[in-house]
Length: 75
View 1 (cartoon, rainbow, N blue to C red):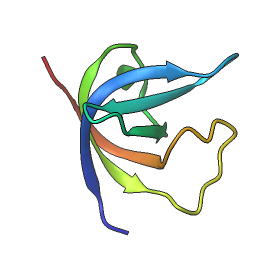
View 2 (view 1 turned 45 degrees about the vertical axis):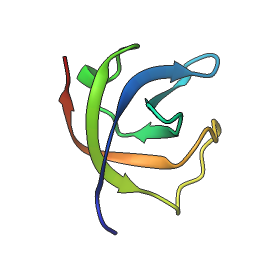
View 3 (view 1 turned 90 degrees about the vertical axis):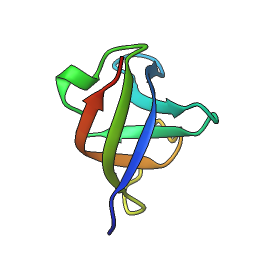
């Protein structure tokens, strides 16, 4: 599996505990898997590198699941 880097805004989606997502400027939504606490902040602009996991099903099902490998918080 190859890594991709996606830049966007972190948003909390869903009800209850919810799930964290990265929404790109073009409107694509990636569900963040194994996101570190520092990344889980609404309206945070970030560049996230990870692997899209086609083998993972989630309750939220809001978009591709991006397993976070690293990230950079942007201004």
